Image (cartoon, rainbow, N blue to C red; front, top):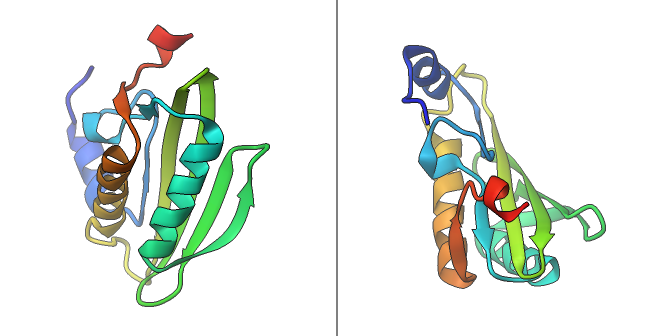
Length: 136
């Protein structure tokens, strides 16, 4: 895994969005896997977002996608992808964007993404990050 370079640091500082992914230079933002079904993961994520004050704009179980929007405060849009890789091996990725007039959200989308992952880790049985190559 490569270290964060100057470009990655610049992009992180001057960004209004954060995305997680299987191959991500920041280990904290790599795809996380849970020992659960897609249905249970989606229900847990929806509950988590509602508890945080987000409105569920769309939830498509077939596609494994949830779209949430902040109801108050900063305008934030979250898209969550939930994919079953194997039975009881479900991957979760976030894409979080903050609507601001500034060229940066000062890390708020990153902080929100990390706190959502942390809460999800406490709700569902977490089995690891970036496990795609091992599970396929």
